[in-house]
Length: 194
Image (cartoon, rainbow, N blue to C red; front, side):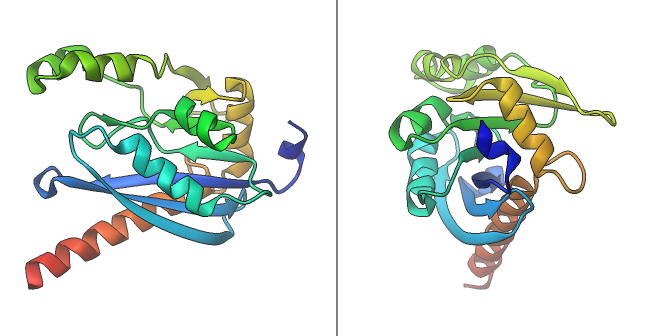
């Protein structure tokens, strides 16, 4: 992981949604670890759908360049039980992929799926394949929960540490989140005006 020593480049993907909208806006940025953004892309995934992985891959493929080192996901179980399969992203793009969550995962996902979806068994199979999270503590306090593919969870943690400037979120993910929220609000406002 020699690239961790440099100002590495990441593709970060984050989402924003409201249940009443029925969709989630995904924003992706190609950024240096310090947050300097070089490129951006967007996609829309359905709430409670099964298209999260494909939409995330669409973003990654549109931003991918030879100098990109890693994909950072702002969550894997997203968009009201849609999911983003980091292993599939790694397999199809060749980029090591890490999924970051900043609050301890709560609740019984399997029970929620059984209650909400007729195809819950297939969903549970896909979500289970994501694997368990590995918990790390930030030096100054706070926790981060990581899944990773193509890189060790400890290295994924080092990526997060190196890319933080303010707060718990690595800067590329923070920027992608801000952009996803802005686009979602814009679309909501346009819908109200029309």
